[in-house]
Length: 524
Ligand code: FES
Image (cartoon, rainbow, N blue to C red; front, side, top):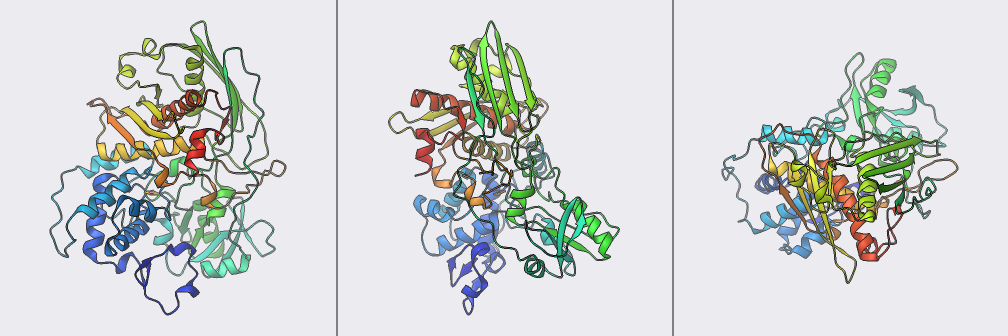
């Protein structure tokens, strides 16, 4: 929002601080500004779920109004925002393009549509695994998020905060505090904002023995960190609103309890009920990437991957013509819930270990792939469950250790819409770099309680730290293949691990590899 013309982050600005001042939200902006910015964001792929983009539109409008339109102004302006979907590059491109365009004029005719937005939506669905709409309503915040569409007279239910002694209603296996409004429910619950801990994150499992000539790795819990917190609503005897209005939350909401809770509470209370999670509820109750500890070795034309994980890790076919022998076991460990539905779970763990073992053994990848995989092979390659292929190369500046660029080649069959596919690819690159270098949450080892409850504490890479991402999409008229961004995630993670090993002269055995020079550069 704008407060007296200055952009401010609404979610952390107390109402008392804006008393007597002029507040402008997205709907109060010049319609020509909104329309042209939304069109530019759609044109670059700068909006996927669309949860972050209304705030970013307000920010960019304020920057332009003040004449602050340099690349540094864009970086600084976006630093207060968080986009989890796009990897920032398409948003920065939209800002640059829009600042360079003539002053927006009210009533100017919209540019003629040159894209098939239905096909674009289909590619978005193949990547996100859920319904997704591509068009200017999405960046303007009109994607139909459940918390926006609830009836105004709905009761509001929030998860009972830990330790709160307050009357609750049980539904969907959880305890809910119910009030006439969100404010009333939060007052009843005595809810305080989640905090960031000073406790460091740690691997969940000890490193296994390293096989001779092999590699090993231990990872931490990682929060999917989708931006739209779980929400749903339902009328008595009705069907609950889905928490996935526009995108798949990287698989994070597949098992959300919000819809079942809304339905059960509405039936029990005889009123429409809106269920709303705060960020800390998502972190406490939502699924994480399962931590694991594993090893891999390449020998006698085979790669053996062995490991233990906090949840099932699916096994995927490798694009390499090597005998692959993967065995994961599941072990109990105190911690938050985990899910194998999150982006590239299993695929990435298997790929990073396989690629590192091939690297350690000095095997030439070009000799090991079939014709189709050879078209995308860079330093690493990965294949999604549906057969989409991605190759990756990560450049590291030898002098500083900084990740200076990422190259990705993707064969997703028919891309359907290159802009959307590219946006998913840059988002997957951002998330893969984060998994290897910066992202984890601290968990109490005894109670399993999550200690990092704010989105700023997850180690998500900021826009100014993202290296340039060069995306090459292989032309194809084959059947469109799903989850190319999963393959990108896995290939980029593997390429990153191998690149920092070469740059630092030693292979880190822990993700996030916070002691690598690449990770240290990202934190500057
Ligand atoms: Fe930015 Fe989804 S489009 S968080």
